[in-house]
Length: 273
Ligand SMILES: Cc1cc2nc3c(=O)[nH]c(=O)nc-3n(C[C@H](O)[C@H](O)[C@H](O)COP(=O)(O)O)c2cc1C
Image (cartoon, rainbow, N blue to C red):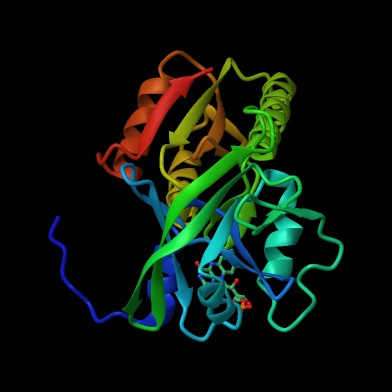
């Protein structure tokens, strides 16, 4: 496949970057006895020796000039149950600290209660980069606030994600779907169920549904394919389609129709239940 360069449209650029999943932090500081802070996704580690981390901040940020004056900041890595804090610290001009419990770090920066981990930093360098500033901090202290089993708040494609909850939902949905499939099989008296799996991320959903539609129309011609039971989505990044069938030869026929519709590009896999 060849890649051609295209002009970069800002909204497509943001959309592209949204595919990079990250944690969420709140960068905080204390200036003139007032806590300040803003939600920041662009945090990453830079160096181990010396211990350096970085974030980038919009040049128009209201908080950053004060953080620069203080010369120090804390990175609060948010936990899965702190999405509301991410939203709160992403608002401008509001009282971001309303209802937020915090205490001062060794350097005097606010540490938000319930965050996963914090790092206390001194500003080491700052670089202008387009409409943002890249800020590099030297880590002088750090500590964990929650047990190792605690889950992080994740951000992916413009939404907060909670891994543990997503996995629980997937499992519940998966179990419920399998039950519906078995029930449907029994009702229509099918020999067995064949699952067609689309092993791609959810951006392929539309394409999968289109393929599925074409596939179903082709299947209608064969009487041994009785029923489409469930479309079970998002189970570990896969989309499953279940087909109830009669007869031992069905698997091979189904497989060849699937290969024809989906193509032979490894998107579709077949497995019998
Ligand atoms: C999930 C999320 C991630 C964000 N990441 C950043 C970031 O990396 N850098 C940044 O400057 N702003 C980021 N923002 C936006 C700021 O939090 C927001 O503009 C905030 O109002 C800035 O506050 P301030 O003007 O007090 O600095 C993010 C917002 C959200 C919701």
